Image (cartoon, rainbow over all chains, first blue to last red; front, side, top):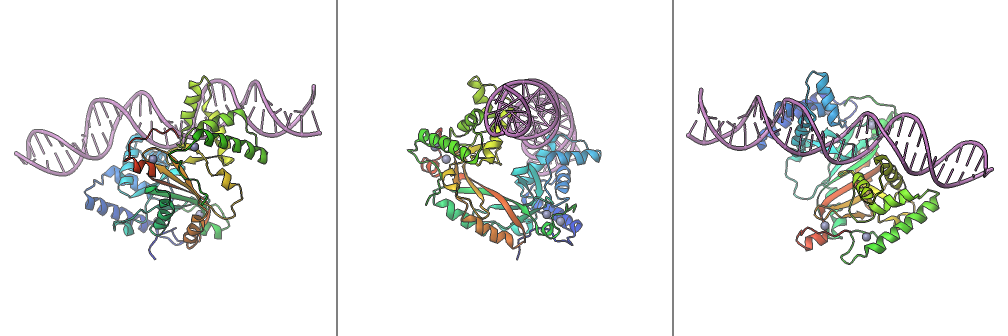
Amino acid sequence: MSSSLFPTFDHDHKLCSQNLMTYAEGHCKHLGLRFTHLRRDVLSEVAASHKAVGAYQILDRFASQGKKLAPISVYRSLDFLLDAGLIHRLESTNSYFACQRNFEKDSPCCSFEPLVFLICENCETIGEIDGQTLGPLIEQFVDQSGFAPKRSQLEIKGVCSLCQASGHQELEKTC
Amino acid sequence: MSSSLFPTFDHDHKLCSQNLMTYAEGHCKHLGLRFTHLRRDVLSEVAASHKAVGAYQILDRFASQGKKLAPISVYRSLDFLLDAGLIHRLESTNSYFACQRNFEKDSPCCSFEPLVFLICENCETIGEIDGQTLGPLIEQFVDQSGFAPKRSQLEIKGVCSLCQASGHQELEKTC
DNA sequence: ATGCAAAATGCGATAATGTTACATTTCTTG
DNA sequence: CAAGAAATGTAACATTATCGCATTTTGCAT
Ligand SMILES: [Zn+2]
Ligand SMILES: [Zn+2]
Ligand SMILES: [Zn+2]
Ligand SMILES: [Zn+2]
């Protein structure tokens, strides 16, 4: 139950992204954060697919819509969205994707919860797993050394089930 | 048992790094890889501490020793060392550190084994854990979604036991 | 409403990290 | 030694991210 992973074959991404934007709106209001136009637009670009996008990709998309921005503007918005927990950053590829687990996550997680991302090397889709159950296990391992973990991120590269089923044909799903 | 973690307080790093260089030598010979002077020197810089160093830091150290190199030369050596499994790359900080688990690792690991790094945010020392036991657990989680994991890296940030004991005083250990 | 302070954004330059293309040197092997 | 492969040198360039300061927008108290 719960844990949203990869979008299914018949995934309605229009609805998916609408829900995400609506959630972001409320989430920010609730926390007294300012969900400005720029931040909204940047999130909207990031959430346009379930793939991770680079900062300069976002810049380019804006540019092709006639909206010229400086890199710093995009980075500032990305930083805001990261802090707000609305997006994540894939460290291994310097790219950003929208968190699809917002809805479940608002309940404060008491213990060390690792972020766990599944990255399909074929279609580049990102799946996010609930790390709550993994957290205590990792803590056990780590505690033996006296290390006090604060936060962690696990990036797993492989092939998603859709791509396996399709024999790794280059999927051009946009979400 | 086994799994080498953080260096202990009385750690003899001179010996530690000597052993590492000796191992690297034999490891490369064994695999028919060319452990050239440049690669040796780069590894030596990376292994000079248990902290992660950036590519341009290595460049600078060489420069201050009168050895002027182009970035690409360092990156090529780093790539070689990464491929040889002699160093790892911290994705979250674009930096590189020497693998201290070489000695245990040569036995081929049959299943998906995640790389697990502990990063002390106080003294920046890196510890590396044996991920073999974590691997199957992660696989279990992931398999439920049909995702086929190939390789993964877990970066855990926190505070090492030495820094906890010393009340987070800025440790200037060089190893 | 008005004015003030803080937050957000614009703008230009620059830093930090990593790569391409091709020439030259060094190594290996017969 | 000769010839091919691997490694390194050299210069330019690409990508990712940040600094410093001016300007605009916003929230809030008066
Ligand atoms: Zn979707
Ligand atoms: Zn896929
Ligand atoms: Zn050491
Ligand atoms: Zn420490």
